[in-house]
Length: 48
Image 1 (tube, one colour):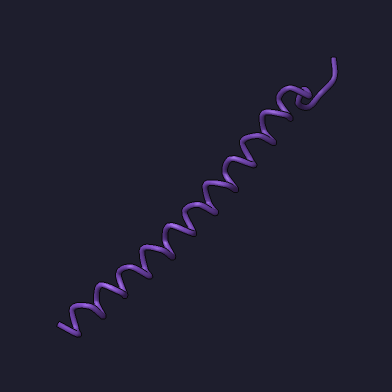
Image 2 (cartoon, helix red, strand yellow):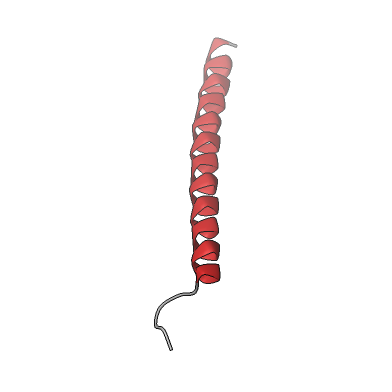
């Protein structure tokens, strides 16, 4: 019997890694967008 993960398990791990990276990048973009719009709202309120 061989030790380690099967090729199917390795494929699944790689797919999950890609998914995590994509979700982290999406979260980063959403965080930056949220900060941008929050600042715009603060500026709008100061000008009113």
